[in-house]
Each structure stands twice: as structure tokens, then as C-alpha cells.
Image 1 (cartoon, rainbow, N blue to C red):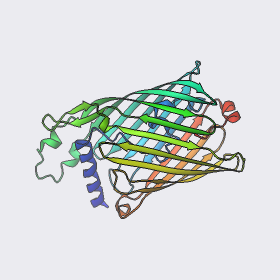
Image 2: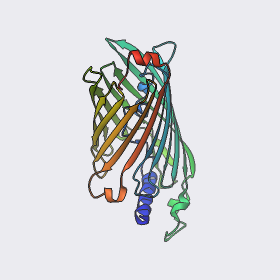
Image 3: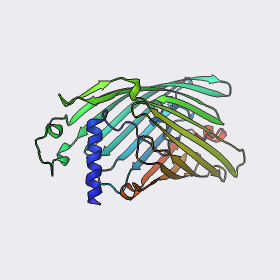
Image 4: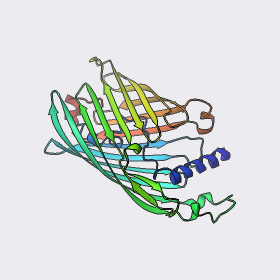
Amino acid sequence: MRKFGIIGLFILALTSLNGFGQEKDVFFSQYWVNGLALNPAYAGSREVFTLTTLYQKKWTGVDGSPVNYTFSAHTPMKNEKVALGLFIMNQSYGVTSNTQVHFDYAYRFNVGNGKLSLGLKGAVSFIKEDLAKLMDGLDDPTDPVFSAVDENYIQPDFGFGAYFYNPKYFIGFSIPNMMNYRLDTVSYKYAPTVSPELYSYTLTAGIIIGKSKVFKWRPSFLLVYNMGYESIRYDINSNFIFFNDFLWVGASYRSGGHYPSPVLVGNIELHLSKQFMLGYSYDYNMGSINNALNGTHEIVLRYEFGFTVNASDPRYF
């Protein structure tokens, strides 16, 4: 187990040093709940003041594997055309700790029986790298790759998105992160770059099928295309809703994309009241890599104010 931990820690360190800044494209299995992580236009779409918190532990078989905490708050304003959102995420993986703060603004139009929302995101990441964790066992502990990189730095970012929704279905498109940071191997500083080739173009959609209080079906999908990796990652989910919306049971298939293997996901949600929801998912990495990485656990809590509005017009997205 320690062997896998050392290998995983080293891979994560190389990812942060040779990639473009940090692991910005964090994949959440319950993406339909954590909407602000993907699209700023999601702000206000629940039509009430909504608080959501999520915990994710990746690759439980690897020491130093990613742990993500998120908190989001979003609400429509008195002027219902405007909605605001706040999204905070703390990541820790390998030698890196990264706290991201997003502020979201959405402007909404009535279109037919739904709403079209256009959103903008302004964000900043506060990053700390403790490269001393990698010094043990190095042939050359004075290697500048490990000693000259800034240990603390700040990375601004911005993004935009569009989101259409009504009580029956939704569709959204976004570019969550439009600023990337490349490591200059001469100065060992991160230099900002804005390049469409490095963007993750994100498309989501879902629909609710059925009107019975006993059973409904809600399929959805997430598609992410990245030209830099020359990869397409897709996530196909199917949720079955029982007992007057109390119990949601679902499963997903996620393609590997630029990751080494596809993933199977199982999820369950308990809607304990019109205001409070508890969700859990487990990711199973397919193939032999699962022997090293094991699975990923994700727990999400959501609380909504103004439940009388939610009760008269329940939302499934």
C-alpha cells in the first residue's frame, strides 16, 4: 500500500508541476446536484436560496490521493432576472493544497415555459505546494524542480455558461475555466495563458419522464471535450425516483477520456423533506487499475429555504 502511495504522490506532483496549474477539471459523480462546479448559469435555477456542501475522497487505495470539499450558495434576487452564486472548493492532493473561490452572476430570460440563463464566473485560486514531501529519496535533493517553484501563489480565472431549464428538462453549455497556467521551466514560475485548445467544453442535459407519485425516471448526461488532451469524456446517468420523490437510486457510466480507465458509479439520494437532501455515490474504476486506486466516495448535502415554492413546483435538476 505504501508503494502505491509513493507512486500516486509522485504522479500527482508531476501533474501539478508539468500540467497547467492545478487540477481544475474536478469531476463530481453527482454533477446534477453540484451544478455551480460546472456552470455559473446554474445560479438561481432552483428558484430558492440553496445551500449545498459536498465531500469527495478519490482513490482510497493511494496515500495522498485527492480530497475535495465544496460549498455553494445561490439564489434568485428580488429582480428575478438576476441570480447570484458563491462556490468554494478546497482540494488537497499529493503535495498541493488549493482553495478556489468562485463568484457567479446569471441573467435570466423567460423562454416559453422555461428560462434561459447566461452566467459569468470570476474566480481565484490560493495554492500552496509543500515540495519538501518529495525530497526524501531524491538522488539530488537540490534539484531546482523541487526547490525553486513558488510554494504559495494565486491564480485568477474566469468562465461562462448558458443554461436552459423548465420543470421537465434542462440543457447547459459552459467553459468553466478559461485561464490556464503553464510552468516556465527556466524561471520555475507559472505563466497565465488563454487558449481555446486548453478549454474543457462542457455540455449537460437531462429530462424527467413520468408523472406518477410512485415512480419517475430521470436520465441525464455530461459531455466534456478537451482539444489539448484530444479527448472526449462522457458521463451517462440514469436515476429512478420512488415514493413521491423520496428515494432516488441511480447508476452512471463514465468513459475514461484522458484518464486510464472508465468508471462505473452507483448513487442514492434521500429527500428527507422538501428542504433537505442527502446523497451518496461510489465510483468503481474498471480494469486492473482498480487494484491500486480502489474507489471514490462522494457525499452531498443540500438545504433549501423557501420550501413552499419548492413544494408547489418541485425541481429534479
